[in-house]
Length: 231
Image (cartoon, rainbow, N blue to C red; front, side, top):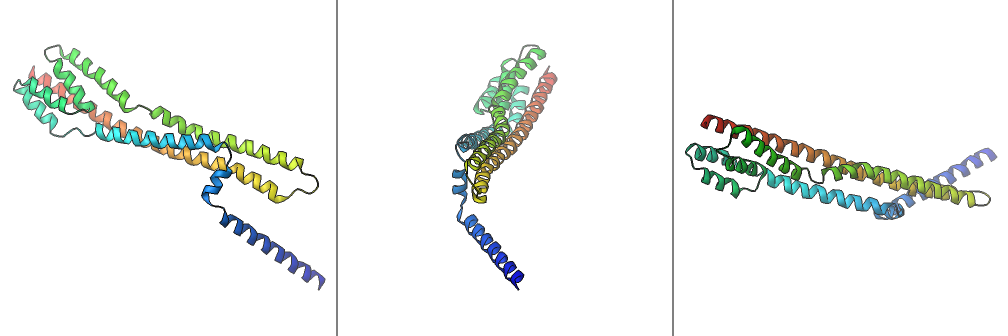
């Protein structure tokens, strides 16, 4: 009888403890968790804002760079074949895109050896590629640095938690230890989230840049074939 009462009392205590933990978990919102992450959350906030800014800015730039009209090359071909080089240049100058800038440089070099024209176009292409890839390396750095900063924050938080436990006299409260640990783990989770977002954004932008570079190379070959036929 006494054993049954003891088991019943223990079960009730466990149930009360679980209910208390559940109510506490429900009362802690996302904003509260982010605040409890400590001072190491500040650089993670900064990296997150930086990653979003770079991603949005690059998306706008790449979208603008890919807006070369499909009929532009057809018009340029027709004018080059009829000898209207000035008109072809005007068409390219109206479009501020990497492909248009490369073709415009090639048109300026018409009359020179084909090799010189090709080198001039390649030089402009390198400059345009550099513009397209601007800040991508910084975004890659964010994707790698954010998780490491998160881990550093966790280690620092764990150290503080165990120092607090060591300074306690008598029985150590499980709440004291668990609170310190979960607050320390917040920085790891936040760092991983920022790192994943930056990593996915970086790979997406790299794929967009590669597609644009392929289009630039294809147009260059097409233009050089046009000049070769014209010769």
